[in-house]
Image (cartoon, rainbow, N blue to C red; front, side):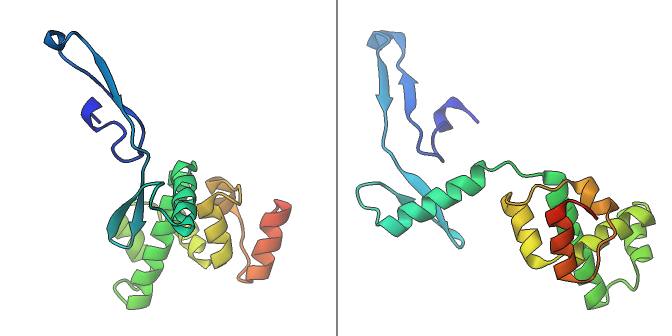
Amino acid sequence: MSKKHRGRFKGDPVTYQLPSPAGGVRLETFVPWTLVRRGLKKQVITPLDAPQEFLDEARRERQVREMAQDTSLMRALGLAHHWQRLLDEGRFSSMTEIAAAEGIDLGQASKMSRLAQLAPDLIEAIALGRLEVGISQLLNGKWSASWLAQREALATGSR
């Protein structure tokens, strides 16, 4: 990102250095604002005209954005659900075909496909960072089909 664009999406202060003919004067402009997503639209909220619910929403979005996410785990969860949808729609008849199409080992594809059977609240907790679990723990675990058993296994840290 160039220096011109710094602060454009977060509302941080932007400092511009004027060229020498102007005496090298340093100007700093700061207008506090927050960019809030509303579906496909984006809306700029300033503190002067923002109702409380907008400020709360902006704070939640900022926390989610700043939260560190395990990208390999998110990718594995996304692939598992994508593959499950392909099987449900009948585009592929087995995990063997999917593994061949993706160019990965059948064993690894099968392990990843089991992630689609995790309880929805566990997936949400993992995505929001409320549940600290590693990708190796999820892939190597023998997960029960029962969502209650999955919750208990992850709560105790065992598989």
